[in-house]
Image (cartoon, rainbow, N blue to C red; front, side, top):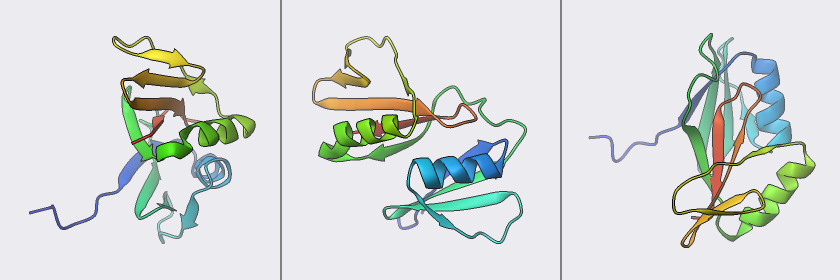
Length: 125
């Protein structure tokens, strides 16, 4: 039923202005006009991300969106750190951490938060 349709990540934020700055300027996503007062859209590769104002922003304690970045993981982590992004460090069973990147077998992941505390991640794929 839905397998032929695209899905988009939807993230609650407290301030669209702060979200636009973070998602466009810090992460480098292409802003898209939505025509909505309390909704902002961003293009990311072949997918989209929608942020909307909500009183519940940042209450999700799990990963809200993941980017599959392949072999560019280390370079992207370094570039985001230069832009002021702080990476999260977790003690997870079966993983080791090298700097800001968690490793479990061949899977490598780095987690960070947006200004509202939404958890985002980068994975090597």
